[in-house]
Length: 248
Image (tube, rainbow, N blue to C red; front, side, top):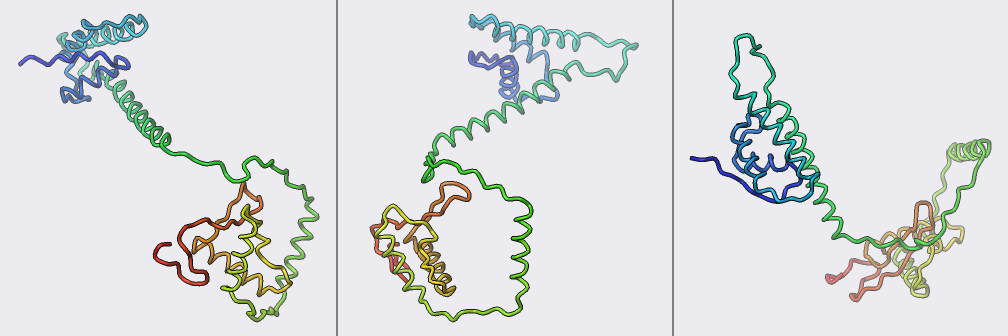
C-alpha cells in the first residue's frame, strides 16, 4: 500500500508541515520514517504555488535537510564506524519537539485572548480623580505615634459601654440618609459621631447587614481612597432589619 500524500496549502512553515504529516500518518516522532516523510514533503513542494521567495526558501532549506538525513540513513554502515554514533534524525526530532511545544503554548494564549475579548470591564467610580501624594512623616513622629499606641495598650482596665442603640433602627436611619443623597456619601458619614462607641458599633453592624441584604453597595476609586456608600436601585422590596424575601 502506497504511503498517503498530503497536499495542504496553508502552513505556517516547514516544521508545521512536518508536524501535520507526522500526526496525519500517526508516526512516532522519536522514530520518524525518514524515507516516507521526505517523499511526502517533496510531494507537497511540487504543489507549492507560493510566490513569496522568503517563505519558499524556508521549505527548500528543510527539504535539503531531509534529503541529507535520508541519504545518511540509506548509506550502509562500515565496521569502522562507531556503533554509538548519534542518530542523524536527532536534530530534526529536537526541532519538532520544541516547535510542537511552542505551538501548544501559542494555541493556549490564543484561547485566553478570545476569552478575554468576550469580557468587558467598567471603569471604577471616580476614575478621573487625581492621585494624591502621601505625606512624608519623619521617623521621630512615627516613633512617637508608636509610643502613644503602646501606652494605650498597657491599660489593664477596659470600659465597655452598654448597648444603647438598636441595629435595625440604625439600618433604617442609614437608608433614609442615602435616599437624600443618590450620588452617595462617604462611608464614615454614615456613622453619627456622638461620642458613644455603642452608636459607632451599631452603625457599623447596620452597614454590614445592609450590604448582606444587598440594600446598599460600596465603592472605592483606588487604594486608600475614601469609601463611598450608595443605595441600590432594585425593583423587589427588601425587608429592613430581617431576612430578604424570596424575590430578593
